[in-house]
Length: 260
Image: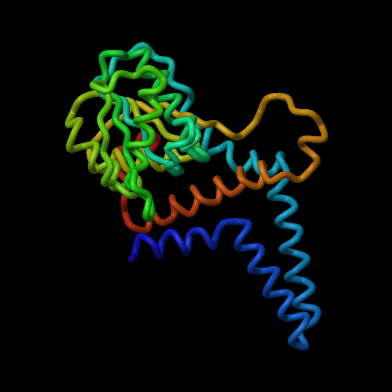
């Protein structure tokens, strides 16, 4: 119940639903109360914020500090485990395996497979429980994609009980113990994930995937025209910021984290 409540409240605080709710409030004030000026102000401010968050310069400026902390891992250190955290997914057996991985999940699995190819003696661990009424777990679907990309089944382990990052860290600890490991997740999620893993006594090497904040050249119109793509970047920045606030309020971080 608390898990569902957390997800619902967190979802409503993301830019699009939150600003739509503000706009709805403004419309109600304009149509059904005498607070005309206040209603118009709420609508105008909400519209302006939605516009700004849908522009590439602001969206990626918000996201870049989260993604730039850990660089892409191309080191030569050998590890025993590569842990790929779960993300969005569905399961349709008629689809190509990779089509069942949604949003951030496919880049995570692709990076996990790339790192396994560089460490073929390691075990590739996929985490993530089943969502809703789905008959398959996030971890299982991700493992099927890895197998389709050439990773032998005997090198794959599935942890399909954890429902969030804190649970994933605990589950991984029971498997890997003190063995060296790579942690693969989205670049914007990596700082928070590392704190969860440090909190349970693990010291993973960060191997971020799915970098979104663009610092390379773009066409001028791509920077100037609002887009749902850039809004999704703003959403990720807000989501991870909210997650970090909740993490700190709950004390789910470790004082040994580098830089502290």
